[in-house]
Image (cartoon, rainbow, N blue to C red; front, side):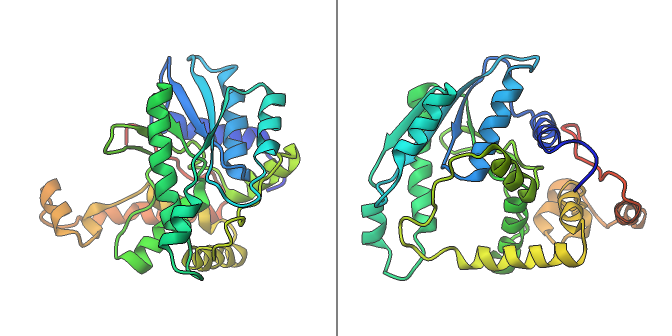
Length: 284
């Protein structure tokens, strides 16, 4: 990805487009930025702070990390960084590790239960802190992996929503929805963020997600730009070309129209010619 805008500008533009396209922020928002200590959440936080200094709207950032009681968790490393950078930072200590290790058999992945428990904690803390938005660091590659995980293993055509409202009424946003993982990783390395290890719990990693991630990386290596095309596909949905009869009924469809196929040719041609791929707008 040499040439063109700098890494920081490219990521900043991707973040800004996502924020605008999905109306993620409003004037006066108090945003709880969830930081795990990984490259993704550090990058999101850094870019949001940079944006907050020049944005036409005013929004406040509150940084939250959940110490879930994993053995050897280097909480002080994160505390020291946040203090040095001047962030409004809260470390929430909740021993979910003991619960997970009790409920999940040895050798199985803890990830699903651990993340559900963490999500519940974050929702509670967001309410206690009076936050109007909860920002998570998922990027483009996470969204594509979720799309294929649901397609292969759940029988659903669904990815991660860039913005959602939880059952409790919390508004969750994913500002890095358009950002490529390789850019995020390069930015984190460039900024020398103090990355925390993610395997302290001793759990097996999410094997299915690793397999899908490797598949997508292999496709990208063989066909450069294919992840961008996949992201474009998520912004270019044609319900009449799917087999969801409930969706057909809700949209009042009787038959697909052949002329709608022109869009597919357009995206493929744009990629071959090296042009910028279309980005969805909030009005579409």
